[in-house]
Image (cartoon, rainbow, N blue to C red; front, top):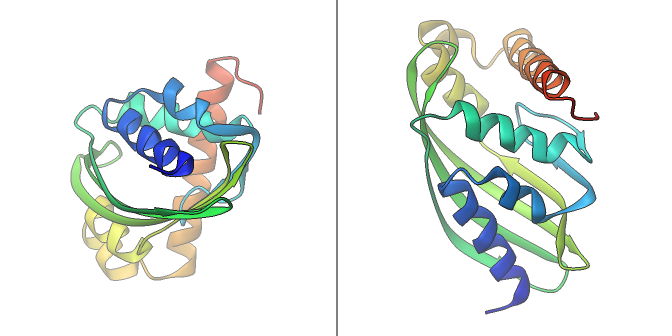
Length: 159
């Protein structure tokens, strides 16, 4: 198996067991992460986000497949099943991941998924009706950024 495929396999295997420390070890110190909710995370924010999600995801289940890599880039598909803590609603999120590698670590990680679909599941009727709207998506992003900042502050993690 290509070393970068092993890296991605390890990353998602750690995610399946909620081993956020193991996930964090897969990233370069100056890694960048972005998805439709957590936009533009850098450095210590990246492993802190995974730590927060692993801690809060009491019923989190992760499946992954389709790992394709070369020496520079890679991709994978993954699915998360969990209860959204803000509403208690069940979420089944289908995500496409893209990676850039440097020195045996993940340097850039970009996840994409349908934020409207996610909002409909996580937020219920409001998300179904208005999840496509920029103000609602902006509010979701703002709340996520606030949650991560508070999480890092409470644990003494540098931002």
